[in-house]
Length: 108
Picture 1: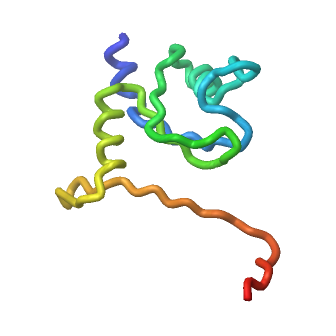
Picture 2: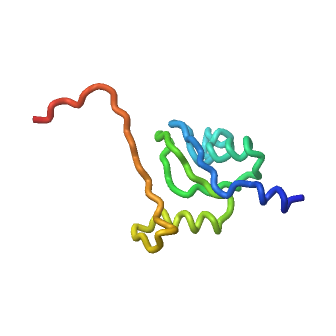
Picture 3: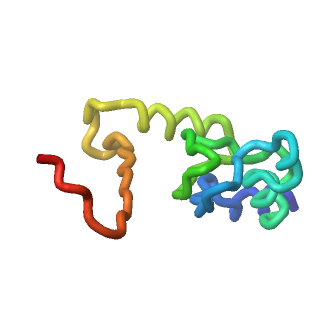
């Protein structure tokens, strides 16, 4: 039954987004957008996944998505909160890491 399926369905999706793939369908990337590809792979109806933050097309990284607007509101609220109101529910923090090969030029 659909009740059993929703009980086993994840509420959050952590998606490894490669660079050069847009999140949303647009122009030549209509069928090849990240959301459409993941929804198809996971057997989800179109427009099920709700991205919880931005990540540009040229950027690779982890994209968090929810499949329910109530879950999206909770997580997005934690992502924008900088105050630790409750030790059981600390704010979500994003960390950006860049890997560089070679040496930076001498700036002096």
